[in-house]
Length: 454
Ligand code: UD1
Ligand code: CA
Image 1 (tube, helix red, strand yellow):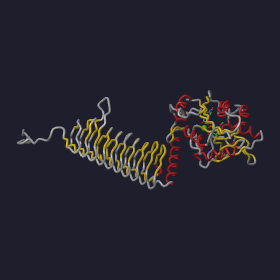
Image 2 (spheres, helix red, strand yellow):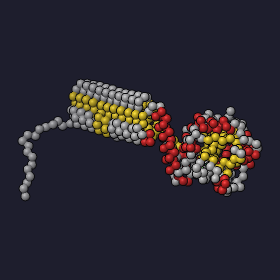
Image 3 (tube, helix red, strand yellow):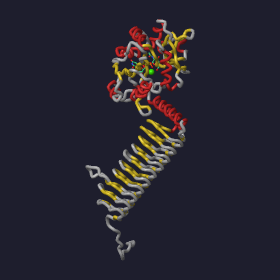
Image 4 (spheres, rainbow, N blue to C red):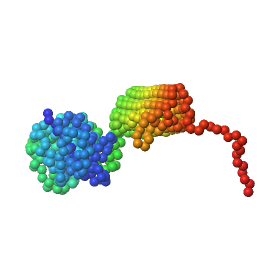
Protein backbone atom coordinates (compact mmCIF):
# COMPACT_ATOMS: atom_id res chain seq x y z
CA UNK A 1 0.00 0.00 0.00
CA UNK A 2 1.12 3.57 -0.77
CA UNK A 3 2.32 5.19 2.38
CA UNK A 4 3.23 8.88 2.42
CA UNK A 5 4.84 10.65 5.31
CA UNK A 6 4.05 14.32 5.75
CA UNK A 7 6.25 16.32 8.11
CA UNK A 8 5.02 19.68 9.41
CA UNK A 9 7.93 22.04 9.89
CA UNK A 10 6.71 25.52 9.05
CA UNK A 11 6.61 26.91 12.58
CA UNK A 12 9.07 29.51 13.78
CA UNK A 13 10.27 28.19 17.11
CA UNK A 14 10.60 31.63 18.69
CA UNK A 15 11.51 30.16 22.07
CA UNK A 16 14.78 28.73 20.76
CA UNK A 17 16.00 32.34 20.45
CA UNK A 18 18.19 31.19 17.61
CA UNK A 19 19.06 32.25 14.09
CA UNK A 20 18.38 28.65 13.04
CA UNK A 21 14.85 27.42 12.34
CA UNK A 22 13.77 25.15 15.17
CA UNK A 23 13.82 21.92 13.17
CA UNK A 24 17.52 22.48 12.40
CA UNK A 25 18.53 22.45 16.07
CA UNK A 26 20.78 19.45 16.58
CA UNK A 27 20.01 16.40 18.71
CA UNK A 28 22.65 13.68 18.81
CA UNK A 29 24.35 13.78 15.43
CA UNK A 30 21.74 15.53 13.33
CA UNK A 31 19.00 18.17 13.17
CA UNK A 32 15.63 17.37 14.72
CA UNK A 33 14.15 17.14 11.22
CA UNK A 34 16.85 14.66 10.21
CA UNK A 35 15.66 12.25 12.91
CA UNK A 36 12.09 12.48 11.67
CA UNK A 37 13.13 11.96 8.04
CA UNK A 38 15.25 8.93 8.97
CA UNK A 39 12.30 7.42 10.81
CA UNK A 40 10.08 8.12 7.79
CA UNK A 41 12.55 6.30 5.56
CA UNK A 42 12.69 3.32 7.90
CA UNK A 43 8.93 2.97 7.54
CA UNK A 44 9.35 2.45 3.81
CA UNK A 45 7.54 5.67 2.93
CA UNK A 46 6.75 5.94 -0.77
CA UNK A 47 6.94 9.72 -0.48
CA UNK A 48 8.39 12.05 2.13
CA UNK A 49 6.83 15.48 2.06
CA UNK A 50 7.98 18.38 4.22
CA UNK A 51 5.91 21.51 4.81
CA UNK A 52 8.18 24.49 5.45
CA UNK A 53 7.57 28.19 6.05
CA UNK A 54 9.76 30.04 8.50
CA UNK A 55 13.37 29.76 7.36
CA UNK A 56 12.30 27.53 4.46
CA UNK A 57 15.46 28.16 2.41
CA UNK A 58 17.70 27.29 5.35
CA UNK A 59 15.79 24.09 6.03
CA UNK A 60 15.81 23.00 2.38
CA UNK A 61 19.51 23.77 2.14
CA UNK A 62 20.37 21.80 5.25
CA UNK A 63 18.55 18.75 3.85
CA UNK A 64 20.08 18.94 0.35
CA UNK A 65 21.61 15.48 0.72
CA UNK A 66 18.08 14.02 0.95
CA UNK A 67 17.37 13.91 -2.76
CA UNK A 68 13.88 12.39 -2.78
CA UNK A 69 12.05 14.89 -0.58
CA UNK A 70 9.03 16.83 -1.76
CA UNK A 71 9.00 20.37 -0.40
CA UNK A 72 5.80 22.30 0.18
CA UNK A 73 5.78 25.98 1.14
CA UNK A 74 3.23 27.24 3.65
CA UNK A 75 3.10 31.06 3.57
CA UNK A 76 1.63 32.40 5.78
CA UNK A 77 1.15 29.77 8.50
CA UNK A 78 -2.56 29.57 9.23
CA UNK A 79 -2.53 26.47 11.42
CA UNK A 80 -1.76 22.76 11.29
CA UNK A 81 -4.84 22.03 9.15
CA UNK A 82 -3.78 24.71 6.68
CA UNK A 83 -0.29 23.16 6.58
CA UNK A 84 -1.72 19.83 5.46
CA UNK A 85 -4.05 21.58 3.01
CA UNK A 86 -0.98 23.11 1.36
CA UNK A 87 0.35 19.59 0.75
CA UNK A 88 -2.87 18.22 -0.75
CA UNK A 89 -1.78 18.83 -4.37
CA UNK A 90 1.19 16.47 -3.94
CA UNK A 91 -0.62 13.84 -1.84
CA UNK A 92 -1.79 10.75 -3.72
CA UNK A 93 -5.54 10.03 -3.66
CA UNK A 94 -5.03 6.45 -2.56
CA UNK A 95 -3.05 4.90 0.25
CA UNK A 96 -2.56 6.66 3.56
CA UNK A 97 -0.52 9.44 5.08
CA UNK A 98 1.35 9.58 8.34
CA UNK A 99 1.54 13.10 9.74
CA UNK A 100 4.66 13.83 11.78
CA UNK A 101 6.26 16.98 13.21
CA UNK A 102 9.74 18.27 12.49
CA UNK A 103 10.21 19.12 16.15
CA UNK A 104 9.20 15.70 17.54
CA UNK A 105 12.37 13.75 16.79
CA UNK A 106 12.27 10.47 18.67
CA UNK A 107 9.11 8.61 17.69
CA UNK A 108 10.04 4.97 17.09
CA UNK A 109 9.23 3.10 13.90
CA UNK A 110 7.40 0.30 15.72
CA UNK A 111 5.05 2.79 17.35
CA UNK A 112 4.30 4.43 14.01
CA UNK A 113 3.74 1.09 12.29
CA UNK A 114 1.19 0.30 14.99
CA UNK A 115 -0.50 3.64 14.31
CA UNK A 116 -0.63 3.00 10.55
CA UNK A 117 -2.06 -0.44 11.25
CA UNK A 118 -4.74 1.01 13.51
CA UNK A 119 -5.73 3.62 10.94
CA UNK A 120 -6.47 1.10 8.21
CA UNK A 121 -8.54 3.02 5.66
CA UNK A 122 -9.76 5.44 8.34
CA UNK A 123 -7.98 7.56 10.91
CA UNK A 124 -5.84 6.85 13.97
CA UNK A 125 -4.40 9.25 16.54
CA UNK A 126 -1.38 8.91 18.76
CA UNK A 127 -2.46 9.98 22.21
CA UNK A 128 -0.90 10.25 25.65
CA UNK A 129 -2.20 10.33 29.21
CA UNK A 130 -0.71 13.34 30.98
CA UNK A 131 -0.82 14.43 34.61
CA UNK A 132 -0.67 18.04 33.49
CA UNK A 133 -2.29 18.30 30.06
CA UNK A 134 -2.26 22.13 29.99
CA UNK A 135 -1.84 23.51 26.48
CA UNK A 136 -2.60 20.31 24.63
CA UNK A 137 -5.62 19.32 22.59
CA UNK A 138 -7.88 16.95 24.57
CA UNK A 139 -9.40 13.75 23.24
CA UNK A 140 -13.15 13.88 23.78
CA UNK A 141 -14.75 10.42 23.99
CA UNK A 142 -18.35 9.36 24.32
CA UNK A 143 -18.93 5.80 25.50
CA UNK A 144 -15.23 5.23 24.98
CA UNK A 145 -15.38 6.23 21.32
CA UNK A 146 -13.35 9.20 20.11
CA UNK A 147 -15.70 11.99 19.00
CA UNK A 148 -13.49 15.03 18.51
CA UNK A 149 -10.45 16.92 19.73
CA UNK A 150 -10.82 20.20 21.54
CA UNK A 151 -7.84 22.56 21.73
CA UNK A 152 -6.91 23.77 25.20
CA UNK A 153 -7.77 27.38 24.36
CA UNK A 154 -11.23 26.36 23.13
CA UNK A 155 -11.98 23.88 25.91
CA UNK A 156 -14.44 24.35 28.77
CA UNK A 157 -13.66 23.38 32.36
CA UNK A 158 -14.92 19.81 32.02
CA UNK A 159 -12.91 19.29 28.84
CA UNK A 160 -9.79 20.77 30.41
CA UNK A 161 -10.06 18.11 33.11
CA UNK A 162 -9.52 15.40 30.45
CA UNK A 163 -6.06 13.96 30.68
CA UNK A 164 -5.83 12.11 27.39
CA UNK A 165 -4.10 14.48 24.97
CA UNK A 166 -3.48 14.67 21.27
CA UNK A 167 0.22 14.30 20.43
CA UNK A 168 -0.49 15.65 16.96
CA UNK A 169 0.80 12.50 15.26
CA UNK A 170 -1.86 10.77 13.16
CA UNK A 171 -2.35 8.37 10.29
CA UNK A 172 -5.12 9.10 7.82
CA UNK A 173 -6.51 7.54 4.69
CA UNK A 174 -5.69 9.78 1.71
CA UNK A 175 -9.25 9.67 0.33
CA UNK A 176 -10.49 10.98 3.66
CA UNK A 177 -7.87 13.75 3.69
CA UNK A 178 -8.81 14.92 0.21
CA UNK A 179 -12.49 14.86 1.11
CA UNK A 180 -12.39 16.48 4.54
CA UNK A 181 -9.50 18.95 4.60
CA UNK A 182 -11.27 21.52 2.39
CA UNK A 183 -14.09 21.57 4.97
CA UNK A 184 -11.97 22.98 7.84
CA UNK A 185 -12.82 26.46 9.08
CA UNK A 186 -10.95 28.82 11.39
CA UNK A 187 -13.84 29.79 13.62
CA UNK A 188 -11.99 29.16 16.93
CA UNK A 189 -10.04 30.82 19.73
CA UNK A 190 -6.84 31.07 17.70
CA UNK A 191 -8.38 31.87 14.31
CA UNK A 192 -6.44 28.92 12.85
CA UNK A 193 -7.29 26.00 10.62
CA UNK A 194 -6.95 23.11 13.05
CA UNK A 195 -5.91 19.73 11.73
CA UNK A 196 -7.54 18.33 14.85
CA UNK A 197 -11.00 19.28 13.53
CA UNK A 198 -10.53 16.45 11.03
CA UNK A 199 -11.50 14.05 13.81
CA UNK A 200 -15.05 15.35 14.29
CA UNK A 201 -15.52 15.54 10.51
CA UNK A 202 -14.43 11.91 10.12
CA UNK A 203 -16.67 10.76 12.95
CA UNK A 204 -19.60 12.55 11.25
CA UNK A 205 -18.84 10.47 8.14
CA UNK A 206 -19.19 7.32 10.24
CA UNK A 207 -15.47 6.67 10.48
CA UNK A 208 -14.28 5.03 13.72
CA UNK A 209 -11.26 6.90 15.03
CA UNK A 210 -8.67 4.65 16.68
CA UNK A 211 -5.96 5.64 19.11
CA UNK A 212 -2.50 4.28 19.83
CA UNK A 213 -0.42 5.17 22.86
CA UNK A 214 3.33 5.58 22.53
CA UNK A 215 5.39 3.00 24.41
CA UNK A 216 7.44 5.77 26.04
CA UNK A 217 6.52 9.41 26.69
CA UNK A 218 9.67 10.72 25.07
CA UNK A 219 8.60 9.30 21.72
CA UNK A 220 6.01 12.04 21.40
CA UNK A 221 7.84 14.86 23.17
CA UNK A 222 8.34 17.98 21.10
CA UNK A 223 11.13 20.47 21.46
CA UNK A 224 10.35 24.14 21.94
CA UNK A 225 13.36 25.57 23.75
CA UNK A 226 16.97 24.76 24.59
CA UNK A 227 15.97 23.26 27.91
CA UNK A 228 13.66 20.71 26.27
CA UNK A 229 16.32 20.09 23.63
CA UNK A 230 18.86 19.19 26.32
CA UNK A 231 16.33 17.01 28.18
CA UNK A 232 15.53 15.04 25.04
CA UNK A 233 19.22 14.78 24.16
CA UNK A 234 19.89 13.12 27.53
CA UNK A 235 16.92 10.80 27.15
CA UNK A 236 18.20 9.81 23.73
CA UNK A 237 21.74 9.25 25.03
CA UNK A 238 20.49 7.11 27.91
CA UNK A 239 18.43 5.11 25.44
CA UNK A 240 21.49 4.47 23.26
CA UNK A 241 23.53 3.64 26.35
CA UNK A 242 20.88 1.17 27.47
CA UNK A 243 20.91 -0.58 24.09
CA UNK A 244 24.73 -0.77 24.05
CA UNK A 245 24.95 -2.11 27.61
CA UNK A 246 22.45 -4.83 26.76
CA UNK A 247 24.73 -5.69 23.83
CA UNK A 248 27.54 -6.21 26.36
CA UNK A 249 29.36 -2.89 26.32
CA UNK A 250 30.61 -1.70 29.73
CA UNK A 251 29.82 1.94 30.42
CA UNK A 252 31.19 3.17 33.73
CA UNK A 253 28.37 5.72 33.86
CA UNK A 254 25.62 5.64 31.22
CA UNK A 255 24.59 9.11 32.39
CA UNK A 256 27.88 10.49 31.14
CA UNK A 257 28.04 8.92 27.71
CA UNK A 258 27.52 10.65 24.36
CA UNK A 259 27.21 8.85 21.06
CA UNK A 260 26.64 11.16 18.14
CA UNK A 261 26.77 8.65 15.36
CA UNK A 262 27.18 4.90 15.29
CA UNK A 263 29.24 2.57 17.42
CA UNK A 264 30.09 -1.05 16.80
CA UNK A 265 32.10 -2.96 19.36
CA UNK A 266 33.49 -6.36 20.13
CA UNK A 267 33.19 -8.15 23.45
CA UNK A 268 34.53 -6.75 26.73
CA UNK A 269 35.04 -3.16 25.70
CA UNK A 270 34.92 -0.59 28.46
CA UNK A 271 34.23 3.10 28.19
CA UNK A 272 34.93 5.44 31.08
CA UNK A 273 33.01 8.63 31.84
CA UNK A 274 32.62 11.71 29.65
CA UNK A 275 33.62 10.04 26.40
CA UNK A 276 32.16 11.53 23.21
CA UNK A 277 31.86 9.33 20.11
CA UNK A 278 31.06 10.90 16.74
CA UNK A 279 30.59 9.64 13.21
CA UNK A 280 31.37 5.96 12.75
CA UNK A 281 33.37 4.41 15.54
CA UNK A 282 34.45 0.79 15.47
CA UNK A 283 36.01 -0.93 18.49
CA UNK A 284 37.50 -4.41 18.38
CA UNK A 285 37.46 -6.74 21.39
CA UNK A 286 38.66 -5.68 24.83
CA UNK A 287 39.19 -2.03 23.99
CA UNK A 288 39.43 0.35 26.93
CA UNK A 289 38.69 4.01 26.51
CA UNK A 290 39.71 6.33 29.31
CA UNK A 291 37.77 9.27 30.70
CA UNK A 292 37.29 12.33 28.55
CA UNK A 293 38.35 10.82 25.22
CA UNK A 294 36.76 12.10 22.02
CA UNK A 295 36.65 9.75 19.03
CA UNK A 296 35.34 10.63 15.60
CA UNK A 297 35.35 8.23 12.67
CA UNK A 298 37.81 5.96 14.38
CA UNK A 299 38.78 2.32 13.99
CA UNK A 300 40.33 0.83 17.12
CA UNK A 301 41.83 -2.66 17.13
CA UNK A 302 41.55 -5.44 19.70
CA UNK A 303 43.01 -4.80 23.13
CA UNK A 304 43.84 -1.14 22.54
CA UNK A 305 44.00 1.22 25.47
CA UNK A 306 43.21 4.86 25.07
CA UNK A 307 44.34 6.77 28.13
CA UNK A 308 42.28 9.76 29.29
CA UNK A 309 41.74 12.87 27.18
CA UNK A 310 42.84 11.42 23.89
CA UNK A 311 41.35 12.91 20.70
CA UNK A 312 41.10 10.58 17.73
CA UNK A 313 39.74 11.95 14.45
CA UNK A 314 39.69 9.96 11.23
CA UNK A 315 42.35 7.60 12.47
CA UNK A 316 43.05 3.90 12.72
CA UNK A 317 44.75 2.21 15.64
CA UNK A 318 46.04 -1.36 15.39
CA UNK A 319 45.59 -4.07 17.99
CA UNK A 320 47.17 -3.74 21.45
CA UNK A 321 48.29 -0.18 20.83
CA UNK A 322 48.47 2.32 23.67
CA UNK A 323 47.57 5.91 23.07
CA UNK A 324 47.45 8.91 25.37
CA UNK A 325 46.91 10.45 27.78
CA UNK A 326 46.49 13.75 25.95
CA UNK A 327 47.35 12.42 22.50
CA UNK A 328 45.92 13.78 19.28
CA UNK A 329 45.45 11.54 16.26
CA UNK A 330 44.31 13.52 13.22
CA UNK A 331 42.91 12.32 9.91
CA UNK A 332 45.07 9.78 8.17
CA UNK A 333 46.92 8.67 11.30
CA UNK A 334 47.40 4.94 10.93
CA UNK A 335 49.04 3.13 13.83
CA UNK A 336 49.97 -0.52 13.42
CA UNK A 337 49.68 -3.04 16.24
CA UNK A 338 51.54 -2.48 19.51
CA UNK A 339 52.36 1.15 18.84
CA UNK A 340 52.72 3.56 21.73
CA UNK A 341 51.75 7.18 21.28
CA UNK A 342 51.98 9.16 24.47
CA UNK A 343 51.16 12.52 25.95
CA UNK A 344 51.17 15.65 23.82
CA UNK A 345 51.97 13.71 20.67
CA UNK A 346 50.17 14.77 17.49
CA UNK A 347 50.04 12.41 14.52
CA UNK A 348 48.60 13.46 11.17
CA UNK A 349 48.47 11.60 7.86
CA UNK A 350 51.20 9.22 8.94
CA UNK A 351 51.81 5.53 9.25
CA UNK A 352 53.54 4.08 12.26
CA UNK A 353 54.82 0.53 11.83
CA UNK A 354 54.25 -2.25 14.37
CA UNK A 355 55.72 -1.60 17.80
CA UNK A 356 56.90 1.93 17.04
CA UNK A 357 56.85 4.46 19.86
CA UNK A 358 56.50 8.19 20.20
CA UNK A 359 55.89 8.62 23.87
CA UNK A 360 56.21 12.32 24.53
CA UNK A 361 55.72 15.76 23.01
CA UNK A 362 56.08 15.17 19.26
CA UNK A 363 54.58 16.15 15.94
CA UNK A 364 54.52 13.44 13.30
CA UNK A 365 52.96 14.68 10.08
CA UNK A 366 53.09 13.18 6.57
CA UNK A 367 55.50 10.50 7.73
CA UNK A 368 55.98 6.86 6.88
CA UNK A 369 57.53 5.19 9.87
CA UNK A 370 58.65 1.56 9.81
CA UNK A 371 58.42 -1.06 12.55
CA UNK A 372 60.00 -0.72 16.00
CA UNK A 373 61.12 2.86 15.53
CA UNK A 374 61.76 4.90 18.65
CA UNK A 375 60.92 8.55 18.32
CA UNK A 376 62.37 10.56 21.18
CA UNK A 377 60.61 13.28 23.11
CA UNK A 378 60.20 16.58 21.31
CA UNK A 379 60.83 15.20 17.82
CA UNK A 380 59.18 17.20 15.07
CA UNK A 381 58.67 16.41 11.41
CA UNK A 382 59.06 19.73 9.61
CA UNK A 383 56.65 18.70 6.86
CA UNK A 384 55.66 22.14 5.61
CA UNK A 385 57.95 24.59 3.87
CA UNK A 386 55.39 27.33 3.87
CA UNK A 387 54.01 26.27 0.49
CA UNK A 388 54.06 22.49 0.16
CA UNK A 389 53.91 19.47 2.42
CA UNK A 390 56.69 16.90 2.22
CA UNK A 391 57.16 13.35 3.39
CA UNK A 392 59.46 12.03 6.08
CA UNK A 393 60.48 8.36 5.89
CA UNK A 394 61.94 6.54 8.84
CA UNK A 395 63.18 3.00 8.31
CA UNK A 396 62.57 -0.01 10.51
CA UNK A 397 64.40 -0.04 13.83
CA UNK A 398 65.65 3.55 13.58
CA UNK A 399 66.24 5.54 16.76
CA UNK A 400 65.49 9.26 16.71
CA UNK A 401 67.05 11.13 19.61
CA UNK A 402 65.05 13.64 21.60
CA UNK A 403 64.37 17.11 20.26
CA UNK A 404 65.18 16.23 16.67
CA UNK A 405 63.82 18.23 13.75
CA UNK A 406 63.39 16.16 10.61
CA UNK A 407 63.20 18.59 7.71
CA UNK A 408 61.16 16.90 4.98
CA UNK A 409 61.55 15.60 2.40
CA UNK A 410 64.04 13.43 4.18
CA UNK A 411 64.73 9.76 4.89
CA UNK A 412 66.24 8.16 7.94
CA UNK A 413 67.50 4.68 7.04
CA UNK A 414 66.78 1.37 8.73
CA UNK A 415 68.56 0.90 12.04
CA UNK A 416 69.95 4.42 11.72
CA UNK A 417 70.42 6.61 14.78
CA UNK A 418 69.94 10.34 15.05
CA UNK A 419 71.62 12.20 17.90
CA UNK A 420 69.49 14.28 20.23
CA UNK A 421 68.87 17.87 19.23
CA UNK A 422 69.74 17.30 15.57
CA UNK A 423 68.26 19.24 12.68
CA UNK A 424 68.23 16.60 9.94
CA UNK A 425 68.10 18.08 6.44
CA UNK A 426 69.76 15.28 4.47
CA UNK A 427 69.04 11.55 4.26
CA UNK A 428 70.64 9.34 6.88
CA UNK A 429 71.95 6.04 5.45
CA UNK A 430 70.91 2.68 6.91
CA UNK A 431 72.68 1.80 10.13
CA UNK A 432 74.57 5.12 10.42
CA UNK A 433 74.65 7.72 13.18
CA UNK A 434 73.80 11.27 12.22
CA UNK A 435 74.53 14.18 14.51
CA UNK A 436 73.68 17.63 13.28
CA UNK A 437 74.34 20.94 14.99
CA UNK A 438 77.22 21.97 17.22
CA UNK A 439 78.89 19.10 19.02
CA UNK A 440 79.58 19.54 22.68
CA UNK A 441 82.74 21.40 23.62
CA UNK A 442 84.39 21.50 27.05
CA UNK A 443 85.70 24.96 27.92
CA UNK A 444 88.69 24.32 30.11
CA UNK A 445 89.90 26.70 32.80
CA UNK A 446 86.48 28.36 32.91
CA UNK A 447 85.41 29.67 36.28
CA UNK A 448 82.05 30.66 37.61
CA UNK A 449 81.75 34.39 38.28
CA UNK A 450 81.94 35.26 41.96
CA UNK A 451 79.68 37.68 43.78
CA UNK A 452 81.01 41.25 43.83
CA UNK A 453 80.89 42.66 47.33
CA UNK A 454 79.62 46.25 47.57
C1 UD1 B 1 -0.97 20.97 18.23
C2 UD1 B 1 -2.36 20.32 18.21
C3 UD1 B 1 -2.72 19.88 19.62
C4 UD1 B 1 -1.66 18.96 20.18
C5 UD1 B 1 -0.29 19.62 20.10
C6 UD1 B 1 0.78 18.65 20.48
C7 UD1 B 1 -3.58 21.44 16.44
C8 UD1 B 1 -4.60 22.47 16.11
N1 UD1 B 1 -3.31 21.26 17.73
O1 UD1 B 1 -1.11 22.15 18.99
O2 UD1 B 1 -3.96 19.22 19.60
O3 UD1 B 1 -1.97 18.65 21.53
O4 UD1 B 1 -0.03 20.07 18.75
O5 UD1 B 1 2.02 19.32 20.53
O6 UD1 B 1 -3.06 20.79 15.55
N2 UD1 B 1 2.85 24.01 12.10
C9 UD1 B 1 2.95 24.28 10.77
N3 UD1 B 1 2.17 25.24 10.22
C10 UD1 B 1 1.26 25.94 10.93
C11 UD1 B 1 1.16 25.65 12.31
C12 UD1 B 1 1.95 24.68 12.87
O7 UD1 B 1 3.78 23.68 10.07
O8 UD1 B 1 0.58 26.79 10.35
C13 UD1 B 1 3.70 23.00 12.71
C14 UD1 B 1 4.63 23.62 13.72
O9 UD1 B 1 5.89 23.87 13.13
C15 UD1 B 1 4.75 22.53 14.78
C16 UD1 B 1 3.45 21.75 14.66
O10 UD1 B 1 2.89 22.10 13.41
O11 UD1 B 1 5.79 21.63 14.51
C17 UD1 B 1 2.49 22.02 15.80
O12 UD1 B 1 2.14 23.36 15.78
P1 UD1 B 1 1.81 24.17 17.09
O13 UD1 B 1 1.40 25.51 16.73
O14 UD1 B 1 2.93 24.01 18.04
O15 UD1 B 1 0.53 23.36 17.60
P2 UD1 B 1 -0.01 23.34 19.05
O16 UD1 B 1 -0.74 24.60 19.31
O17 UD1 B 1 1.05 22.95 19.99
CA1 CA C 1 3.38 22.70 19.95
